[in-house]
Length: 88
Image (cartoon, rainbow, N blue to C red):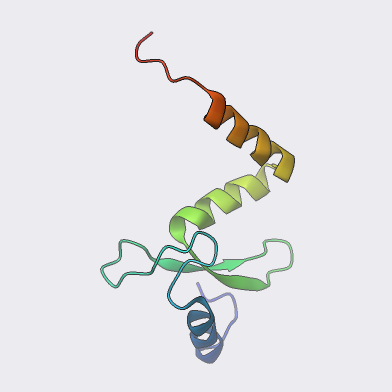
């Protein structure tokens, strides 16, 4: 999808990102292992930039379910403080 941007606008996004995901900084690879996709605001339809598919999926999930920055802090604390069980 192009989300209504011109080829020139897309090229400007590529230049701005330097070939890296604008969220996690992973580099785009021609082999297709890290593909950059056009990220857009679902409410306004405006294009924000280029991010990798993984970040796009996670960002979409977080936004759809209304998770907040506070929830993200709680998740980080939970992950950092949780002891993993080797078996049940």
